[in-house]
Image 1 (cartoon, rainbow, N blue to C red):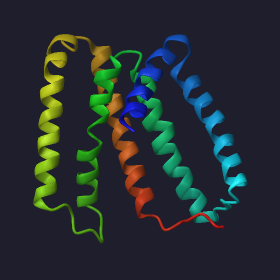
Image 2: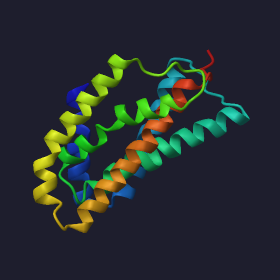
Image 3: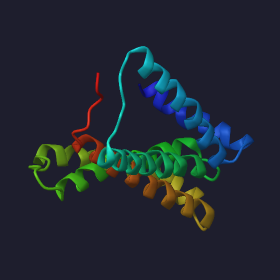
Image 4: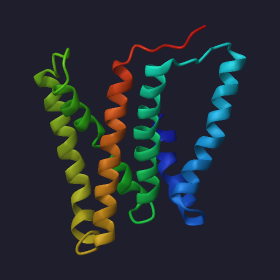
Length: 171
């Protein structure tokens, strides 16, 4: 999974060199959508969301794919793909913070917070030299970093929302 995850950032980096990040994102999902629908047909999985389910799926799609992934693609124009991937690694911290404020959740145990804290410190440690040298005074890169952090927050919120939903595929 790490190979494909990291490869995605690299593929986006090369993709935005030849086309707009918004076109690249659109093409990616216009190709993936029919493939997934075809697989649903082959395996006889019916995806027939009803009113509220459809609205929830639309919200999750807009947050995850429309804002989350597209912000990463846009950012790849201004930041190295490795730095972009590291910024997206804020997702576990975001998830812990979001879950903390939602009802019906006991929150993360202290051990989990220690792990997230160590992970975040490691992230800062890895990013610090690049932040000091490459972002010094470069407003485009600073804006790109902020955009990808907002995108990661949207992705995380959609992930938490999808995990809490009860909608399932119908056979």
